[in-house]
Amino acid sequence: MASWALSRITNLQNHLNPTPKGENLIKISPEVSEALSLGKAVVALESTIISHGMPYPQNLETAKEVEEIVRQNGAVPATIAILDGVSCIGLSVEELERLAILGRKARKTARRDIAHVIATRGNGATTVSATMFFASMVGIPIFVTGGIGGVHRHGESTMDISSDLVELGRTPVAVVSAGVKSILDISRTLEYLETQGVCVTAYQTSEFPAFFTDKSGFKAPSRVDSPEECARLIDTSSNLKLGTGILIGVPIPSEHSASGKTIESAIQKALSEAREKNITGSAETPFLLARVNELTGGASLASNIALVKNNARVGAQIAVSLSQLRE
Ligand code: PSU
Ligand code: MN
Image 1 (cartoon, helix red, strand yellow):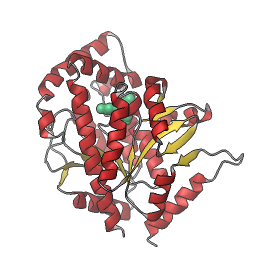
Image 2: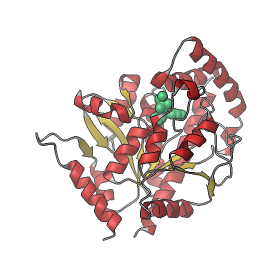
Image 3: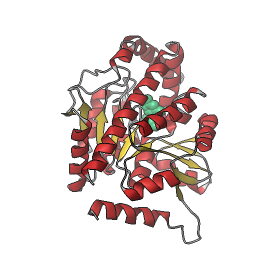
Image 4: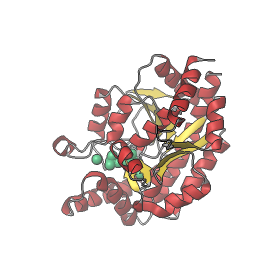
């Protein structure tokens, strides 16, 4: 058996062992568990996008559709969340529904929050950083989301830099996203990722994408043009034991990037409102997303849904390529 497969299974068993008191900290769904043990393609999915990123019921519909797209493209979806203090890798439809209805009542759980949510038997929706942590723990090499966190505007003085960026520097998981929103400082985000040693690459384009628009004005440090190329990149990074993550920026499909300009002016307005209302820290991103959606009459939500689905398709294709490469 290949060494990566062996270490994956050992990893899995170590973490599935209960604590000395017999408590289970982690639960892997039967579908995900079987796929992992057979070396089949699995795609991790985050849950903050469900609880804090979109309103009900669009959040539930999108979560289900994204899982379906992953399946249609030949991979097994593993949505990750903490429910009643248990980290769940792969959610049932009932669990997805529970999380979608909980919405903001679920705790937005970044790496720093994981232990507290579990210790208090809470419900946590995992951000990119926490989802990467769990994906890596159980041996899922690919994770799909909409957008990642970054260096916030004025981050050079507030030091509000998403833990997603630090996680990318310390956890070997490839994250497929539509890049970084212009609610953030894209230039400093790319600088910070460089400092963290993260391989940033753009998919079928030379420019790093900016979530609602396909262009950010910043060139991506590298480019990949097919799922096979992405799979080779991930496999090489893993064989080298670099230990760092990879950020794959997939541009929003062109039919949706047109509304980018309208959305950009809404972002400017939402940003100044956040400053007036003194909304900062982990509350800032959810506030801005909801406000931009109101200001654009739902156009930003439609774009958000379209890009997440597109990322799910690309991510699943990469996962399938990677599992074929490792056969
Ligand atoms: N960007 C989005 N939608 C989201 C998020 C980011 O377009 O839902 C979520 C992700 O879970 C991401 C988190 O990991 O926000 C980053 O939050 P913060 O900026 O507080 O680190
Ligand atoms: Mn922050």
